[in-house]
Image (tube, rainbow over all chains, first blue to last red; front, side, top):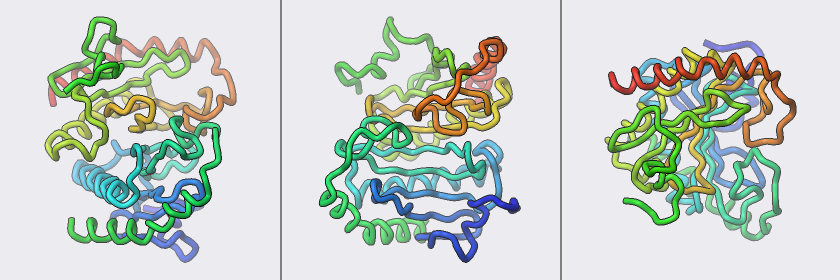
Length: 146
Length: 146
């Protein structure tokens, strides 16, 4: 089930962000956000609006993948705190944000959607970006085993 | 496991918001937010930091309770969209926000943590608040059966 004009339905298409992991149910991408290296998104493949619109089996599967991505982010990015959210007000196509947070990040301790309160040190962000290949590998390994 | 000074560890205490549902693992409250009638919070009882710090059994239980609360909110509050998030940067004690969103709410389509863009009509908020006894009943019914 795809919806015309939905940017997340297009996630499987030629102009989409390359997925770190993809199967027939969902895909996982590492978001290209300069302030938040390690920000991941788990995107359900079908155009479904809410978690509670999924079958029980699919819901448990999606929860499990979000958990594995959280684990992969924790083990490679060593954040101060994990933030996990499913919002979708702008794009009502089921997806989860999995965001490593640090005391020196642009919004901490506020959510990343609040007004920024600082600029993180570029060398610190660079060191975090250097972990992304490890994050990519950790996500693929966990999801291919599960 | 409790942590001194943690306001969510105190959720079981005498000054806490009365819970709509509580057992030895978690509690559910309806948040007293004038702009967001139906905003619920599921609070893990022990002082645990992240979903991925729970045992598998506890994690599945908590996911299931969040799902039931989402369902209860949808059936009684008829929102445009559900928002579900576990952040905890300020209070790093595991809890989930379950928020009914409407096209006329203070922040839509931005997350509730962004800057407000409007004031909702008071009569509309009143009508939503009038649903809270039904929400309370729906949460209790779903969780007592599960």
